[in-house]
Length: 258
Length: 362
Ligand SMILES: Cc1ncc(C[n+]2csc(CCOP(=O)(O)OP(=O)(O)O)c2C)c(N)n1
Ligand code: SF4
Ligand SMILES: [Mg+2]
Image (cartoon, rainbow over all chains, first blue to last red; front, side, top):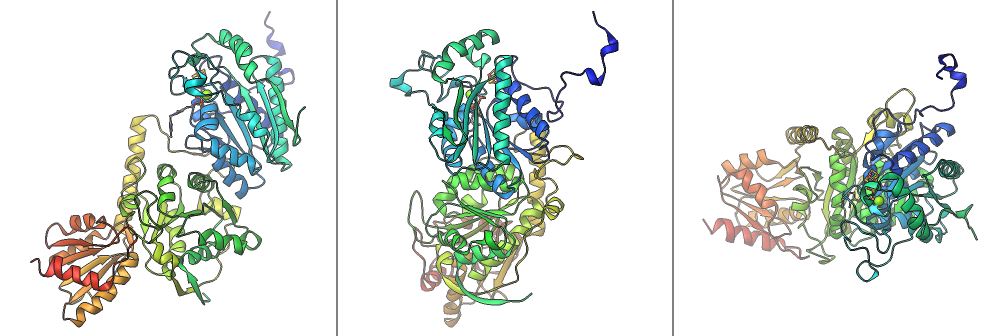
């Protein structure tokens, strides 16, 4: 039964963070973008770095991320976010510049910018949403699309012959000496959200301590693009995406996890 | 201001000007004939003196996007390249223009198309002044003709770029980039403090203080009505530049029957051709556009009412001539002369072209 007497600030267990604006997010219900936004915003709030945080939004479904993060932001051209972040963090070395990018943005058109920013060990945080598809443009094949997966540009399923292999860009980046922290997480359960939050917090703490590049991949569903309900998409993600993209830390404190 | 005399290459002058003008960051990628810009900066290590950031990027795509990032947070940032590299930057340039970001881009032009040649050329006029990237936008384009102007236009470039929130291109060529000349350099202008940055670039995304809304730097506006409005604003800005910022120089035009219109290296060659012409009794002068956008339409229109003909001289197959013809509106003959593909025309060739294409053709 609802008891109005307990509605008091001291009993508050959850509230929206002020590092998110009040704008209504345009993401499909059940999509991981919104959840990940909230986690990043909460970490920024908890660390008290809102005045130093600079968000670089990508081109992709999260192109309007700058409307949701209540921090100073820039919208990059498709794939170029790490180049922007490189310059900004070098020009404001005590700031917290982070990019927020999809798999097409980061691992296809922006591969060069990603690899070189990581290889230089730029002191930036990269949040990488891997949903194995180009969500924004209507569900075309991404470099991360699984073999056999049907998309608008692989309507009979991705084949190695035609399209090559799914790109494990995160493992590749972990090989670079410039990356200090590389991890792969997800946001499909409450437990996963907690772990992702710890990972994102770690990334921003590393940045504060000027450790080099911290890279957090979030394997996420694109229920629209995958043409599934959100719960079904999460199931499919666990059964298929997690096989190719296993969850867990890949590199911690500059050392590969054995 | 204390003036100091130096001997430098045009490319080095750009680099020296960057340091002395309080530039916060230079991002570049090597390409002949402008590699000395970054080489000079790396040797000078300005980060130890002024705190200026200098970084070699992995490509021109990256360097122009680094510039976009730096400009978006209100810093004085620049890059330089030559034709093929500038082609690769076109995406970044239209984004800079769309998001209304101030920056300096120096193009030390070489012959094209394609990989072309490393020798000087002026065949990037269209690309510099008519877009190059997509959408309705304009770069502010300055055309230095001397090493001194390579230096001076970096200072002028910051002024224009921040006044109008618009990218400024310094369009030179391999000859001006490589030639060594004397120049005067002035005192160091200190880099902006954080407080000055906030005052001079109040719109920038330098980090949100508690007492204001967040700033967003973007060229995206999905609502077409608002996008059209944004375009109107850009167009109004370009018209204001045309009204207030046209710069040009005239030499020996008072009694001229004919004029050359030429910028950069070609303007200097034309000056010699004037001498040769006048020795033969041909009264010819020079109008040298210093801003290519905004273009000196009015003075050219005025001359077209007075002179018997105009010859544009440009190391291209004929690009600027289109703008000169538009300004002259058929009031007098307008022809083009230029060697290209990396060949520099001689003063004799220029004078001969005037005689053949204008004087005798009548
Ligand atoms: C230069 C350029 N090429 C293509 C596009 C079209 N485009 C927009 S978003 C996108 C793919 C985005 O996919 P991803 O990065 O995976 O993000 P998601 O939408 O899946 O989150 C493409 C190809 C563009 N905006 N710019
Ligand atoms: S299209 Fe896919 S990635 Fe984009 S908001 Fe919808 S579910 Fe999320
Ligand atoms: Mg995607």
